[in-house]
Image (cartoon, rainbow, N blue to C red):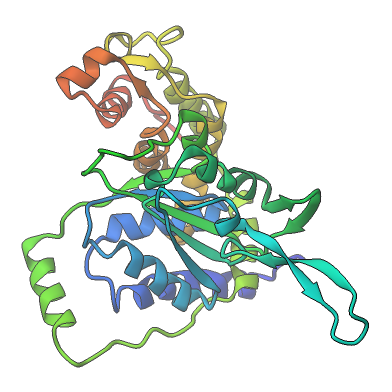
Length: 331
């Protein structure tokens, strides 16, 4: 469906109102909220890392209310089974004919927004149950394929502390997440506002701003955002420079074991387009690529043992590359 200019303008206004509606409940965390919305508009999924009590669940639940979409939450535990996520078959008897048959009962994954809480606390067998859904937007059970409702957005959380007894996500599954978002503590003023807002009787009501159909239209619009050849080449150079075999950056050769693959380049350009649209622009700027480089590359650069010992992170590698790789001068 071709959107009229007025319809495009209305959608962009709603995106701005959407962020304001979520901020009725969520204090601060502007960068985190923006990155989550970018992932949603780009049609990908998010891995969110933060210590307990930073409103990760509240942020996702509030976003689902503002989007008027179905929301489900799964608390991942060591005894969770794949059927607890995708669903299972139950034996049902027809009261009239007495005939028995197996009926598939859909699991919590059949929702528009799914919060996979503490995904690193469940074994790989259960973690992998999300893979097909994340990539193909469908679930296969007993040889039959069930399509998921669109839009479909997974936000998985993991706790950076208490790592004993956890199951770190393998690199192949990490790569399925479009963005790896880190959430930190609020500032002093933000924390005072949080204490004031959450210890009284007044509750802010969140209104549904954007429908599921409009989110799909926005996701299609993201693909049409313009990016110059120079910026595309710059994004490609940044990704290629993360690989020790092809980079010219000594910093990478010293600290990195494996660099990012081509999927990182696709994610970088797509999220830069989504960020541009989120800011009401129809063209990508260098600032978009620079801002999205961190959450895109954070989980796709594998550091070596020396880096782990010296506490050199992938964000430090990204910061170094953004300094040494010359950005386009004229756009």
